[in-house]
View 1 (cartoon, rainbow, N blue to C red):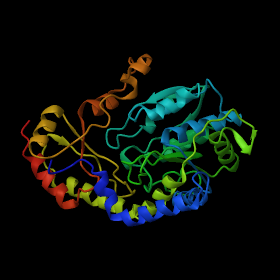
View 2 (cartoon, rainbow, N blue to C red):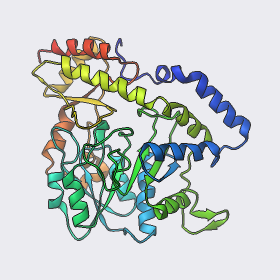
View 3 (spheres, rainbow, N blue to C red):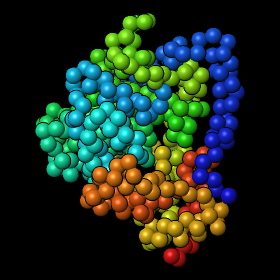
View 4 (cartoon, rainbow, N blue to C red):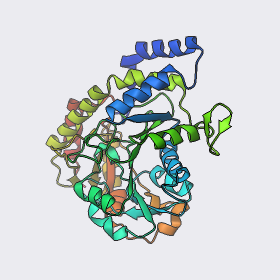
Amino acid sequence: MKYQFLDLAAANEPYMEELQEAACNVIKSGRYLRGEQTNLLEQEIAGLCEAKYCVAVSNGLDALRLILRAYIELGVLHRDDHVIVPANTYIASVLAISDNGMTPCLCDARSDTMNMDSSLIENLITPAVTAIMPVHLYGTPCWDEELMAIAKRYDLKIIEDNAQGIGAKSNVVGINGTSTTGGLGHASAISFYPTKNLGALGDAGAVVTNDEQLAGAVRAIANYGSDTRYHNIYMGLNCRIDEIQAAMLRVKLRYLNVENMRRHEAAQAYDQYITNPLVNKPDIFGNMIQIWHQYVIRVEKRDQMRDYLEKNGVMTDIHYATPPHRQPCYRRFQSYKLPVTNDIADHAISLPIGHPITADDARQIANIINGFKG
């Protein structure tokens, strides 16, 4: 393929010497868990999200699971509570809720942002609902005045799934006075899966919060439930990050703004040069910062478009062809009326926007797309 969807080896090549040096330093240190690199990464991620605390953990799903579990252990939330979550999301958002014995309440998406539609949230409120989980899908902030007002009105916890949004900024300030995703709500989860804008060289994630008690509970639960050595205050888990992944992330964090800007320039090129009326482009919002983890168009004849693009050297993907409510493990949700989510699932195509795609590549891909006749 002339236009690869994502080449991780090429993406990491510019930082190879720094990554190798960082890995060697960890190996030489003899400290491979809960060491200096993890401590420094936590400080840097907390600073990036304009929050007080960060706990680096094993992956993004575990970060979400740990937040909910910690709130349950602290008596803030409870098993059997209901959590409002977008229907249009990767299944991990929903799995974290189910894993804690809680019930997901699926909220349909907005057509323009493809994020949760805040105007539908209040219709889902019942006495059992205790939290909302906005997902900053594809790198577009899921945040507005209505969502925040509803959370305050009903005293709901806001737990951000920031797996795809690190470095994005909303046009509405959050409850902590920042507009940066990850610091908008009461707590947030980040994924550092290798394909993310800030990706590790393996699995990794983080929990971010301004709540010292929550951060302490998350840290303990992630370390077998231990607050001090051989003293277990919770029946915990093993969800720790390792020092090498922390070191890798610290190297790549220095270049996150460059990566996000490159993706933004490619997104602008797609937006400017795709003129095919058969293509529904994602909106670019000038009053917020989108980091374009994915650039997702919608096309009625999706399979034909993907075949056409492949024949012309363009690799594509689908995020996500099967939304959570259509998955076998959530068959109880299959009858839900989620028209926008279903439309996105049936017609979405993710265009290449990760490394090595440039703005010029995006312009050339746009020209190929314009030749599609349906």
